[in-house]
Length: 383
Ligand SMILES: [Zn+2]
View 1 (cartoon, rainbow, N blue to C red):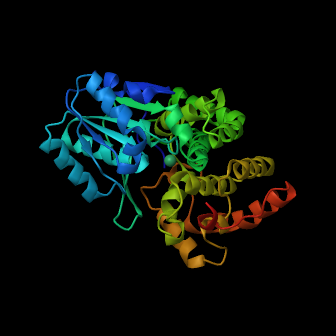
View 2 (view 1 turned 120 degrees about the vertical axis):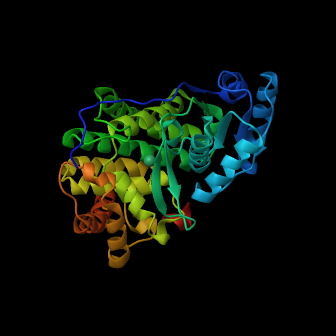
View 3 (view 1 turned 30 degrees about the horizontal axis):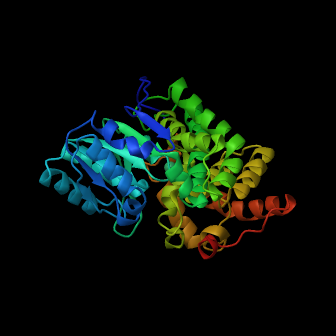
């Protein structure tokens, strides 16, 4: 898909704040953005951070207004949040929690005509920094990307809160962020448009590569530390790579096959219980196969992502090589005209995706056996 533009562009959040205890400064940073924030956080998240957010808002002279939104960002839940903004005459909507809460907040903030801020409590996706949201159907399938003219005015992430969450969520974020370089590399090679609506800049592409390098160096020690809920320099680096570098890298560097295959996988009910970054990792391995990447590169990627705790076989996501009908549906969804798979530097047809998806099963099973790594088992039963 050649880009219909010669414009290059980068988008970014107004401010990024990260560190242990950062949550206690949320009021201070929000006071620079608006006078009447509405905090969107479910009861579980509020149980972890509610005390600090409440105290911080009061210290900054801001009212404490919370909506208990939970679930997926759907057209209906977004509309409801628009109503909450209007009912409270809010001027900034603040998503505290995971990717769905934050995507719903971005969509609702934009529709309501107010500012919005991301306060992720996990580093499991790069959604918090971007100016787009993924909206799902009531059944949990990918519906559409919604694009906004602005990124969040603030992205604030408390490293200790992230380290207190289960390590598998940080691992999922590593899966989302590793795809960023593979996709930015393909987008640069094809000269396709990025999610920011122009050609990739050197900046976007370089940040995607930096995210990749940081993760190969730090992901495994960071996961070790987070299993003990410890914040170390490696944890800080992985949080920044997962959240900021990957966010800037995908938005201004471009998405390609990996995320299109993720979106296709949302059409398979078997994969519904998986995290975004887990499905994206299946997309990354499949993209490497589609592009005929060097065998050593594919082998290294499979070994590394197995050690991180990410799926790289069909078995792990509840599918098999014989599920031809489901794989065909995934491939059809991944290759619709609007999908980013057409940013690959060659034509990708549904049959190519089916073949690549089927091939990763035997490929990854063999690579893992040769490396002395565990054979694949279905994820949902074990994680
Ligand atoms: Zn993603």
